[in-house]
Amino acid sequence: DTGVSQNPRHKITKRGQNVTFRCDPISEHNRLYWYRQTLGQGPEFLTYFQNEAQLEKSRLLSDRFSAERPKGSFSTLEIQRTEQGDSAMYLCASSSLGRSYNEQFFGPGTRLTVL
Amino acid sequence: DQQVKQNSPSLSVQEGRISILNCDYTNSMFDYFLWYKKYPAEGPTFLISISSIKDKNEDGRFTVFLNKSAKHLSLHIVPSQPGDSAVYFCAATYSGAGSYQLTFGKGTKLSVIP
Image 1: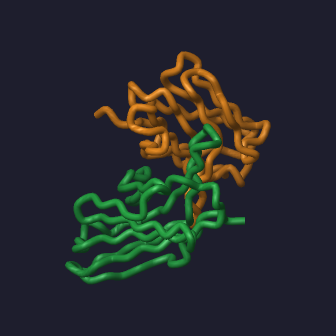
Image 2: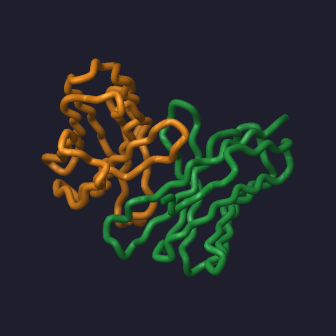
Image 3: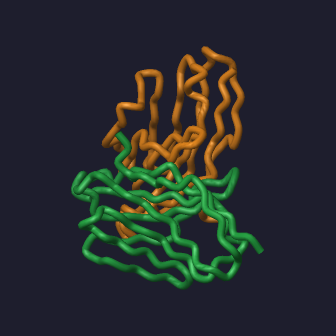
């Protein structure tokens, strides 16, 4: 399977705990995006990387959120001191200039539940 | 302020008939538009796209129409099949911003009745 993969698929945590999600993009894609989707809404942009450089962050990405893509391949998204409002589906997507950066391919998502 | 709007939360269509999903946008800077399909417990799947320099793009059973003056686009599915039942998201982007981040609507749930 050469699509975008995300782990874990589900995470249940208690308020105040830290969580980390991983995304493995399509191998030849140099751009990687993180989105968040809450119930009844479309995905909302959080941040993106071109290779290992994080080039833009949304105002939705509070100081408790940090994302990395250390070698320009997989990426991690960490949420510190989780709050109930962080409960959402976290989606990762990747794209490449060859196909057009506009066409982003999404992974299955990580569903976070904060109790 | 929602920049991409899908005003119909749901749509039911008989198998074999045409499904028409609508989307409106407010940001005139958007220059590329996409439709994604999403099944429960899966990520969105890219379906079809259109650049603002075109007014129509077709791919098999799927056709997207863009009316820039009205800031409106629509997705036509002909003929509709039960496997098309899913949530459809309209998305837009502004390539000049560099990030190509997608702005999504809230989605329309399509049910195709056998």
